[in-house]
Amino acid sequence: MNFDRAFELTVGHEGGYTLHRCDPGNWTGGKVGVGVLKGTKYGIAANSYPKEDIKNLTLARAKEIYKRDYWDRAKCDQLPSGLRFHVFDVSVNSGVSRGIKTLQQALGVKDDGIIGPATIAASRSQNSGEVLLRFYSFRIAFYTSLSTFSTFGKGWMNRVSGNLKIGLE
Image (cartoon, rainbow, N blue to C red):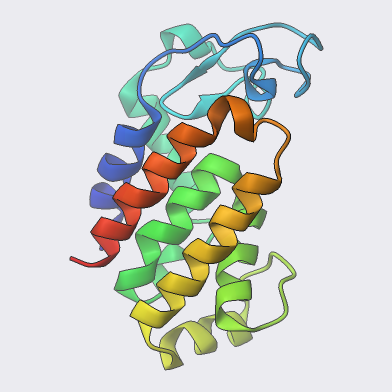
């Protein structure tokens, strides 16, 4: 899978502008009530991008950010095609370090959040289908550990379900 297709799929999960007061990502301070409530649009959150004009963010600008700060930082082009989108999607939704750690846990390598030679080699030597099953078990465990699961968990589980279907294609 290439970046353009992965972007299309991930931005489809993220959607348009939201200003949910209970979402820490919507606040520039990263905690509810801390900083300015600027919201999230196309998955670009105020806590990570406090200087962006979130409400008026264009899809083209979001795509630039996704490529530079998520796809490239997670080294998705170096991963097997069947894993790229999944690592990218977690990176956008939960942070690049979490995306990489989830992959590393699924591969059984040191989960330090850094894509290096050992992670790349392990990703290329293991069965991608089996890796994806383990990957999503770790992703679900992460989501259910969050204090905001009762508020956002249904959406996260729908995202996981949709992504698993993509993994089977």
